[in-house]
Image 1 (cartoon, one colour):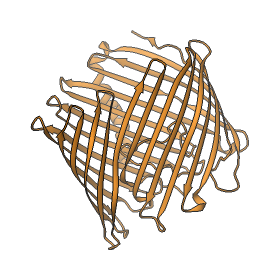
Image 2 (cartoon, rainbow, N blue to C red):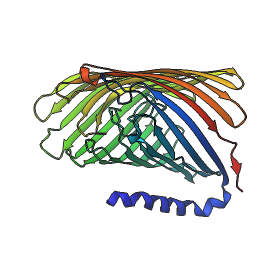
Image 3 (tube, rainbow, N blue to C red):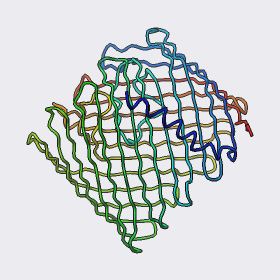
Image 4 (tube, rainbow, N blue to C red):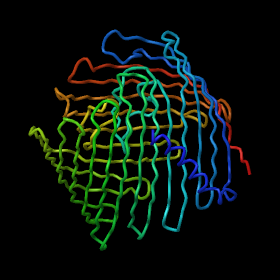
Amino acid sequence: MRNLIIIPGLFILLAGFFKPASASLVWTITPETEIRQEFTDNLFLTRNDRESDWITVLSAGLELEGLGRTGGVSLGYSPSYSIYHEFDEFNTLRHNADLEIWKDLKRNLRFSFIDNFSRDERPYDPARGIRPPDVFFDDDLRRGREPRTINSARARLDYQFGPQDSAYVQYALRHEWNDNPGEEDSVLNSPEIGLISWFSSLYGVEARARYTYGWFDESENRDIWDGRIRLMRVFTRVLNGYVQYRHNHVRYSGDRPGYTVYEPSVGISYQFAREGTMSLGVGYYFRDNQDNESDEGFVLNADIDKTWSTRRSSFTLLGSSGYQEAFVRTGEEGFIIYYLGRATYTYALRRDLDWNLFGGYRRNIYKDRDPERRDNIYDVGTGLDYMLTRHVSVGLDYDYRRVDSNIRNEEYYENRGTLTLNWRPQPRRLN
């Protein structure tokens, strides 16, 4: 309950923080309405006894944005109502609200705050697709259609003290409430600090430390300490090499044994000018479990986020791999090794017609499951977006999602089609 008071308190504090500069901001407002018709041939994501349904979603939204020379704020809210034609007991009023604030406190010091609130009955969001994890790892294992509510917030300070030297401190908070009694409510708190410093033209160091406390209403609570230090060496203007050590310690509040991970690694990083980065490394982890059932092995550490654009097309590549403690959903997942990638291609067939094609892959290895669980998730699809007028568009999308697992009952596939009619005018200036 104490954490429930923190969120509105932060909103009040941030509102007062921006009040003196509000007159210097340029404010715009943008409304939006949308009608979406969805079809799924596997509503409950099951291997057998598949059920299909048509889902109509009616939504309206409003976005308020204020931009200034040294700061900005964006606030959006879009409620929607989902109507199931066969299983109308899952009809739900969905909510999605976003708040983003940034402010340059000094020339080289920036404060930012992001908050997202959502209430949704869908097991996963098809529009989100397969993406690298943020602060908290969510493995998308949900199957049911009971609504869940999630609020995620992050406050951060970034300080630039040299041409390539920077430091940050941030605090992340995540609440989850589930209407399904079989899924746990949880609260996750995670402060973090980081530093990049070059002490010569050839050598630099990067360090990061994060502490996470997870509270669950039924499972054991847990403390997680995760830190790394990386020594970097410049080879060319865009290519660096590194040697890294990562240390991870997990402790549970009950009888469940914790573990400690020791991982040295080596790798390279490549800088695509200002448009993106890529890093690739190989490590070897030693995981010391308190129950003496230790394990070890090679792990690939990769990260890429890059978009290539031409006049009529764009290609985006996202990828990530590594390991993480997953404590979202039921609190029992534990240590996970993951590999994922996603590619999206968009091409303008005409000035008013865009075509897109995407594909994603994700592999999760649940080392603490008994028996060990290994999932391969595939997500491919395509779509067309046509501008009927300057403010009205219609979209037609197809998505195929498949989960292959060594546990046969966890396997399923789903075909999903969506027809969307959207109205979004140009932003209107308020001052």
